[in-house]
Length: 372
Image 1: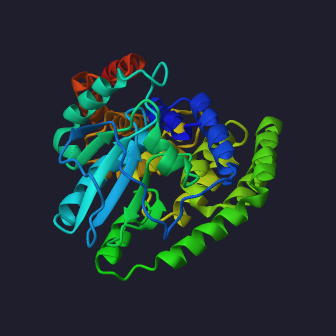
Image 2: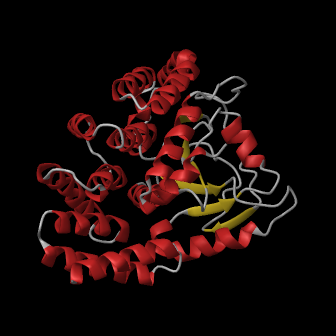
């Protein structure tokens, strides 16, 4: 189950998709870690990749050197978000740590189909300098996915592994959640792998009731009872706090369809309690409010403020985020800003060969709306 494949499409901004994302996330949270055989402190498995797409091949983990092995896929939205971050770290730690991205779980017909190699190579080439580190491809048999991801009980990507100077795994986690700090500490030989392993085991043990919590969440969603939904959400977050950035936006969108007042309060509480919210999360909070008819002007202004933060974070390079902000300007009466920003969104979308056709139509239709 590749949970995060759905998140790639969140910029299409449909409530139905958010509900699917929530359902998959809840299922992922309940994923049993039984059979995990690879953990912090263990010797890193071999880099048994099928093909090197970019950079210098890493044949083995040399003693005295630090390595980062990150698993990703071309279809994975969060992976695309983390790629520039990995590039920044690869440059920051040049000569001190070697970064390698391994493509896994790509779409294929069977365990002998290698046609996806070309798609991965094309993706890497198009990323250019944004993906400036070694890149490899897992074979159709999924050897790397099995010996690393499955062995470590990891069911979602992107996932990164840090290998220390002794060739042992020092850390396993999401590349956007502490990897930079960990790599620095491992290089300085100040990282405590045993403590990290104990912490992760405690987190896994705390998931004992996650299946029940996920079922309660699903039942609450079906009942359309805001209080029940929030209660089920709080139960999940209490047991799995790391899931908050993934689950909260979907809960927020669902609540908007039940009780807009309760939803906005939930959203404000989430934003106030979340430090360093990334642009994607900001967009997932702002869009449902801005898109919804009948919200108050205060609500639209609140959502616009969040959208403006997302635009600043992405430096006006993400057309989906620009689209959200432009709609926010339109909702709050600033049609001149709405038109100017929407034009930027349309122009960027037109230049993207991978842009979704429906997205292009939506952007253009709103441009026409603002032009009237």
